[in-house]
Image (tube, rainbow, N blue to C red; front, top):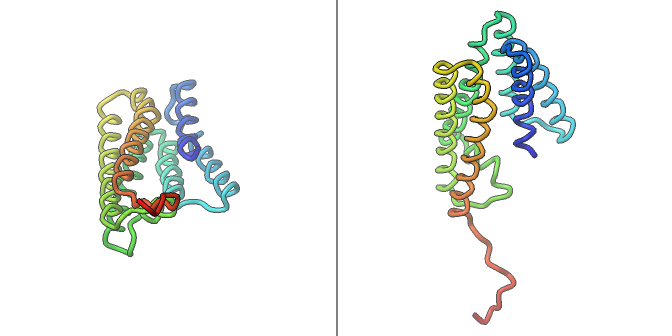
Length: 186
């Protein structure tokens, strides 16, 4: 459900673009859609993750430039800048603080050794870096329509594949509790 909510403004952006064929109009709708998403998250959970706030700020900044200057190049850069900012934050957490960002986010439900958390965190750094590069490649080497399709389907698909692969990594490194139902005579 969270992943769907995270991608809802992008779906709205996609639908508006498909109906209007205009990147500026789709961006003008994306900005309030993202604001409403954040307001709903705050209302329903009582808090907003920093990642959502960064995304909102970038949508307002790059989206605002796109609408104000009527130039889609700014909104095309937004996914790359957001991904690279996340990569920098995740990388910085390797050196600052006792826990990486990934560990802080997931450790309440998953127990893994320290080296596994650090490895997973670095994998996320790589994922965010590559996603930023792929976005730039698609944005500036293909048509605007292909980029809009990629922004929804490509980025969502790559994220889902990455999360599934991350699950395999985590299962390999998870610390399992001893089974308390086992017969002690064994």
